[in-house]
Picture 1 (cartoon, rainbow, N blue to C red):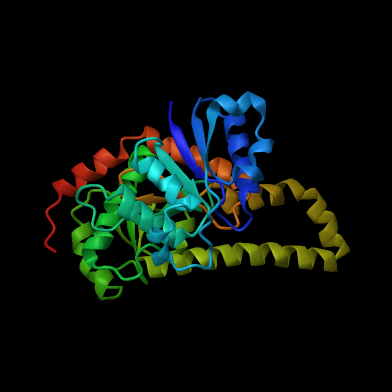
Picture 2: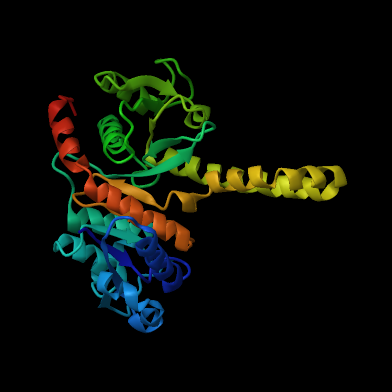
Length: 333
């Protein structure tokens, strides 16, 4: 039975969504697993149903690492809920960790305390983007590494391919390098230098553009964390703006309002598809144990799905595959 450590105090809304999401995950799951909630029990222990007590352990701490704090300070905060949750994984008491707290601090702690997989130079944060056919595209890196070398991008492709195969169950993932054109000659100096490296991979289909992320023409998209984070934030903003524009224009027209009522189910499905809560969180790929970094604004649905994502991650052979695949490629650095 797997055990997931949850930073019960992480995120913008304190313990409420973390605990509620944990309870929902345990209730809805067909598989049995345990959760260790790390935080101040006075804020949430009374909310845990008696039936779930055998599956929930509490590690008490009152210190919370704030979202506004510098990520470099987290190593000094050994009593914080985030630090303790990651230490549970390092010590082997938990198989994975989920946190909606400070993303930079979570990444730093996981890399330094849990450690990197052999051969991995830099772990990467990945995210799932919806496609127009109802599928998903894995994009990495989306924030862990703002300045990258070509060999880092090459390794991101290896990390992404392994995650797509082992966790997302994509049999033959197609890997693309994000650029400003499909031609091999397009891109900046880093992408141009990365292209010949990626050609060593059978799964590499070449350069892809931003629109390809959403049209189901690729399964894994590789970029540096600076570009990836802008892409992620822009996509979230566009999705939110489109929803607001639709609502605004519907209110202006009685005919549009009538149509909207008929299309209510379609709008509901669309909202669900672009809602980050449906994906749970972003896996930090490349560290020795599953680490899921959730949005600071995560609700209980997001936490529930993040826990499920952590379970799927823990059940896979991804780390062994990553180490083997990195060792199998000979890349001059």
